[in-house]
Image 1 (tube, rainbow, N blue to C red):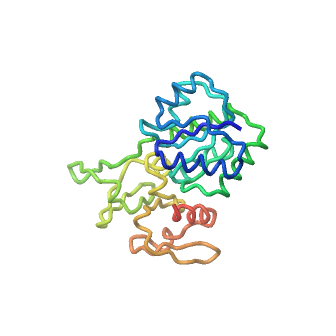
Image 2 (cartoon, one colour; image 1 turned 180 degrees about the vertical axis):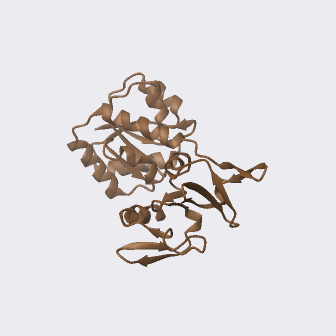
Image 3 (cartoon, one colour; image 1 turned 30 degrees about the vertical axis):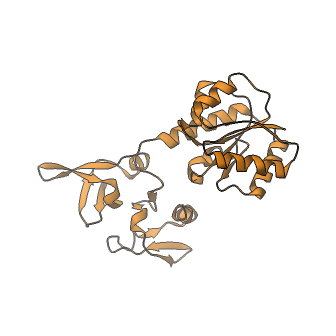
Length: 250
């Protein structure tokens, strides 16, 4: 099997190459590249290679840019230190992804998966496109809110939660200030980072910075310990509990 490693850290690339040889002595690393530019130039020549190992963050950009510049029919395994949340969209459609530091067991499973996989390139490329947009999506860093006759700026980092009250969405800050904003909770989910904020029930989107203590609650639910939330709004709805636990672990 012939592979190409695209990785901007020399030691990481060499480590991966050595690990591949330990797993299967027949694997041949035919080339290593550390940038989008060099990778595109080399892959344009259509080298005979069976599998690509791509780090997401390269010296001159994201490796996803390679796919926007040339058509690639070769299966891909992504190697990245990036959080799993950002790459789950193509977890089932690319050959695999490996989170750094890469373990021998995980790498071996990826190789075996590749050997058995009936690979569908167009599905992978569609997934890569989705993830590329997700990684580059710009979330709001501040909200402009009305204060009397003035407009003031509130940094997203200073927000502890959004709550829906009587048809109005209220932004609540660390210093307990409350501002009405012209967004519904549904609209907010498109504007704020899902890593930093979580829709815990029908009425509240909470900031990760506001979750200092969580208590177990009736019927397999959780309750956020917060003086600024009522008993009703501080409860994580049962259908969101598993996602909430996963969010806290990120």
